[in-house]
Length: 387
Image (cartoon, rainbow, N blue to C red; front, side):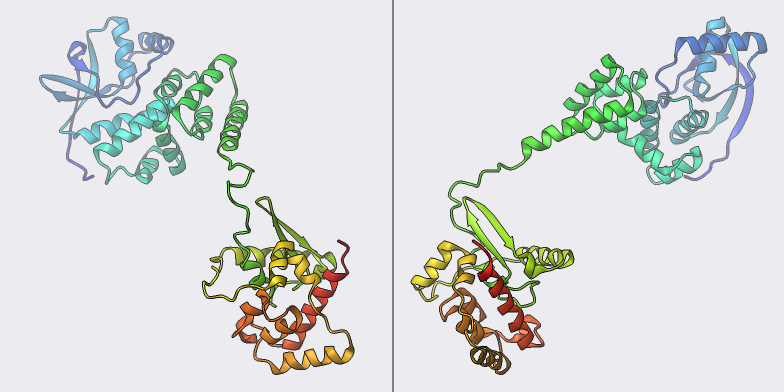
């Protein structure tokens, strides 16, 4: 906003020809304050002139509304005034508001409305940062004041009348509707609640509203089969998973039940890693069944019915050292885990089918023999676990 050249004259002017500014930020002038100021002016005289600008054969007040009201009460006919010309609408609003802000005699609602008026008149110049700089306030304070304009009319009126304070208003802004704001504002008024008490009331209302919006704990109608049934085999065959083979998952009555063998996890850090790995996997699209997949045999159907735990129980571990050595040799010579799963779980098992065509590198496995060792250890722990 460019600075304009102004002519300033100080003279006595007729009070009856002075009108209040439509940009006046203050809307409430307590009678007691005006009476006190009248007494001071009567004894000491008017120390600081009011400021006006010429309009329509008279003057419009720019600043000094309380002084004008005080001398009217004393019955004065004229008042000493600083007459400024020319001056823009934006400058009129700014001068009056900034003067009041610097004196800190506005209530929060008057301050908020005055700030909004400044921004409306010249949004390019009167940014929050500029207002904060001129008024000597923090920008966060300016932003918080402007938020008060989102309050209900009833709450705004309570603020103007100082029934509730700025701290109360900040708490009321957390509520989801103006109806809630009015309800709590009435409690503040009737019960004389402090800010901390108001916060407790607001927290209680928000918690109650959140509980009503919470999804039902009952599973959706028709959710009888595990929608992630095809994900678990793929996840369990991922040898990068912490404690591979030492965890199981069942789906019953719309709920998932995870069981992790503490002997397989070993440490709290390992358990945390496993949780993160499962969570990351669940964030990916769940694989859909292929229409041309081979029909599962009786064993696979039984596995789906009994869950992953039963699948681990039926896994075929090597019975002799020779068989285990042969399995390790197969892991070392195979390009991927498919042949290992076929030997342990059977050729039609979901583990085996999902491992077909994949290489050890697909699972970032650099040591197939170590990966096999972890798998066998996990299966053994699952089979040794008590039902």
